[in-house]
Each structure stands twice: as structure tokens, then as C-alpha cells.
Amino acid sequence: MFDVTVLGSANLDLVASTSRLPHPGETVVGRRYREHAGGKGLNQAVAAARVGASVALVGAVGDDEAGRRLRRLAADEGIDVAGVEIVDGIPTGRAMITVDADGQNCIVVVPGANATVTADRSPAATVLLAQLEIPIAAVVRAFTAARAAGSMTVLNPAPAAPLPGELLAVTDLVVPNEHEAELLGGASALSGRVDVVVVTRGAAGVTVHDRGETWSEPAVAVTAVDTTGAGDAFCGVLAARLASGEGLSDAVRWAAAAGAHASTVAGAVPSLPTATQVRSLLGATR
Image (cartoon, rainbow, N blue to C red; front, side, top):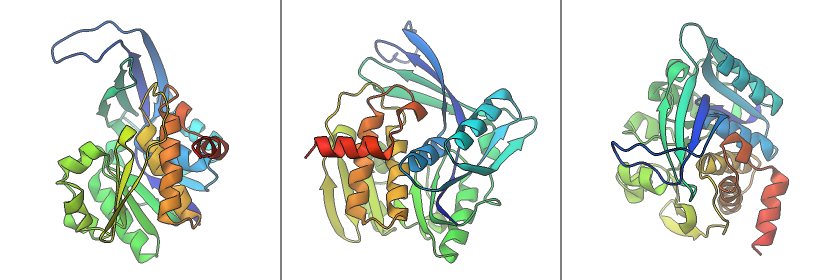
């Protein structure tokens, strides 16, 4: 049994850096181009593994070089990839990311093989973490089975999409950012349907709605370079700390520090911190 099973996407991130994000219909000249491993599922699995959790990743990649690269990277991080299916005839997912000089980004995701993900190969774990870059039906099946087995279910509703009642009924904790929360009807509406809603607000910190009580965790002050992957760092570390038996408050504190660290390094997977780096950042804030 794993500490955390992550059901989600694996993408190759194509990242362009610019002085500012383009307006609709506008072309801007990029400063730099990079390729990184990414996808919310892979990012969150690596984030959980780097802070010490035993992790399994369930997803799908194409039978192409990008897919082989992503599976190798996950395995090198100590993540079990037996549940990452190799799909013929469909390319590995891609994310086209533009990052401005202030570290803000805009992202277009092309699912590719991620659209074929099912819940048929989800190994048992203390915490099951999923996102919405894969079919919602797969998440519903996996969460239903996990709940029946006594696992905690954590949903990162990104990208934001209508959440069916059958999914919320088997979800213990929802982790949207402030924009996703608004698109989903607001934190108050969500907290009326699940036990815990954790809303990440970037530099404004984190707001937690926990069974009728609301409290906040301040942001860790850092100089942002690239916010890509910051939310995934938060979710992966939160799941890992909850799986280790930490209380919600301490788990959120660790997750907030992990997200802050991730915003100081370019790229998604390259920015995800180790437990030592999170402890160092937490120590510097005291």
C-alpha cells in the first residue's frame, strides 16, 4: 500500500518566456524556450515523492519519445509507474506555457493520451489525489473505490469544470485556487458539499474551510520567477503530509511553503522542493 496514489496527467511542457503575456490577437517576441516534464498528475506525484512519501502514478502516455521520457523521470524519482499505460496511436499530452517577467503564466493543455486514462489500475493508498486533466468519469470511479477501501480522497479541480454530485459525494477534500473556486460557485458553495475546502490564493496565502470553520495560512514571502507548478507543489505536499498522519493545519503550512519555493524556480518539475528545502524555508519564516 502506498502513502499517495496520484491519478492524473503527464505532459511535456513547452515553455516560452516573454517580457509580458500577449493580448488576444497579438504576437510578442519570446526571450527563451525550454522543455520540461509536467502535467498535473506527474507534477503532484513528484512533489509528494520528494518530501518522502511512497507514491504511485496512474495515467497514460503515448508510445513516443516524450512518453518514454516522462515515465523514466517518474521512475527516477522513486515513483511506481506500473499504472502509467503506454497508448498506441495517440501522442503524449502537451502543455504550451507562456511566462512573463513577473512569473505569471498562461497555459494551453492538449490532453493527448491523458484523455484515455481510466481508474482500472489505481493501487491502494492512504491518500488518493486526482485532478481534472483526465476524464472525470475515471476520477469518480477511482474515488468511489478508494472511499470504499477507507482511503482519503483529495481533488484538485483544475482545470475548473462542473463537478458532478457523484464525485463530490466521494471527495473528502477539494483544493482549488481562488480563480477555480470562483468558477465553481465559490468556496462557500463547495464547503456545503464536501468536508474541507482549501483555497490557494498565491501571495495572499491560503484559506481553509473545515467543517463550518474558516481559517487562514499566510503566504511565505518569496520573489516569484515562474508560478508554473506552484499549485501542484502545494497539492502533492499536502497529500504527502496528510498521508503521514499530520493534522490539516501543519499539512497546509508545509504545502504553502512548498508552493512558495516552486515559484522561485523556472519550470514545473525542476521547481518542486525536497523536504529539506521546505524545512529550510519554514525555518526562515520563524
